[in-house]
Image 1 (tube, one colour):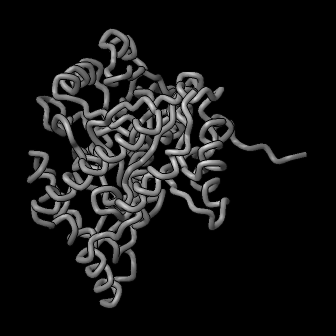
Image 2 (cartoon, helix red, strand yellow):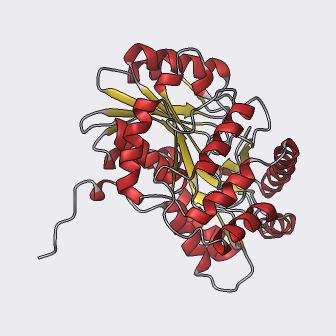
Image 3 (cartoon, helix red, strand yellow):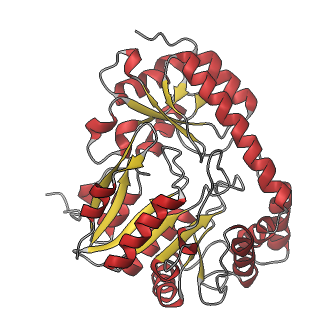
Length: 389
């Protein structure tokens, strides 16, 4: 008789995004482009890497303070004050985690109890539903409607009730590229304050905004005490493998987060925290150049996909593009995604993995464009072989 696994572990599958990368890599050395998983194929900033190397050679090899090295917490506080407009206390309100993924899990475990409900917008980054389940909560989904990925105010209002403990907001959004505007965030904030709900905001793509503006929910009137703000090193500094993320929350919430984080991972890699502290002090020109670089990549990838026959939902932020595949005549997204890998040589993510009901995403796939120009050129060449029906 097989040993029983937990009910929680049986309620969700492994990451489809990372599975698609494994499927792509199984092709071996055949020519191809992996546009599934969102990691850059170009170098991280040299100054950041050199700072981490210096830290290793200086024997900063033991545990940092559990909630993050002093240098990194103060660097986070300074950067947030500069770009987001609020001033977190680095000693009481900032926790460094092992990437934004662990940060989200620590936040959920710190504020959510079994039986609570957590509101999640769909399509969603695939970790959010399992995070709620692992916390013992019930995810409650509210739809973002294409083509502009707006939410229905009545539907969102109806989702809040006495069981609601938290709402997750990812802006700019993965997978859609939606940038929640100020009015939308004010509407969400009013509901959070009415029902005494915590907003957990994943803002890791904050410096990749092409239309509109990035607004941190914590800066809106009355919302600082109701918000956990999450960001990290991975996207802005092209270092997804360093696993450095952070959470900002008022002291009483940060205290709970720090306890959970301590027993989840103890702490993030000490020498990499020193590299991160250097990166967060980069001049304004770094972020200006980053935004321009990704705007150029977005526009190029939109053109590639439209020329290949996709219906494209042009993203306002982040570095992903959702597309509709109806013109190609495939029965569903998974069949199409496997065809793209096996016959065309391009990795993508089936749209159904971003929805509670897979059928809502069966006509969609997501691509990333955080790649070198020559990588995108190869993608264009390969995708030109597609034939819309």
